[in-house]
Length: 277
Image (cartoon, rainbow, N blue to C red; front, side):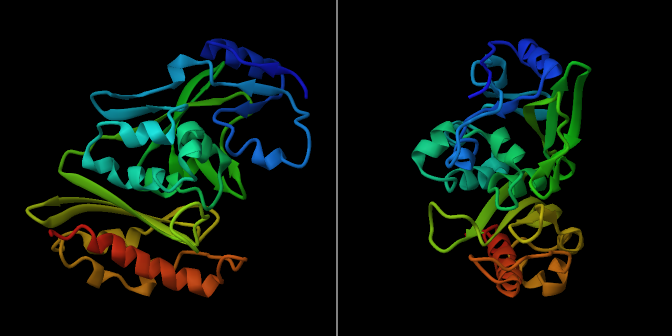
């Protein structure tokens, strides 16, 4: 193994990055499996000692989720219905051990097309906060994940938080995932949806589909079509054309054609769940 550093402060971690190339370690639930067949040879910067990167707090304009917040901490947090979809995804990320260790920012930075958290963050209009020796910058999650398991994070940057904007109206969210089984499975297709409504009429909609393109994709044409619709009739608005921008692949889990058809059905199921009981 190369050099190993576990600084207690963000400033010290950034200093290490400015002086060399490090593999960044957070929860390690993706880091170690990716190196299962070979020893860890690169220099490692372990962020788990930085208390400032942990926890969820409310600000006047956002919910600020520290980069080291785990899936279990998200599930347990007293958050509004806006986060229900993200919590549903958290319950399907691996087993309890993974949920207790894996971090929300680590899942995003791994940049897998099948990352369960990413469609939710995209639908939530979440921002990524990145720190470097030059200062701090914000960018939308949809721009941060660039495809082919790459992100826009610079070599000297650390993701410090995820920021979810507050909504003016009543907002709810959901998450629907299709896999070969219910748990401990990589998704074939998945959908995150956020709906704002007033008197059961949709005033704002956001939907993102994962595992059907290199990155999680929003459905802007469908989002516009949902505005003004009754909340108990949303699934009937969905057509395959609304998902035409998706670019699924065929692999061992499903064919591209099956993924495309499944995504349409998952979007309908997600929207159906918003109807009053």
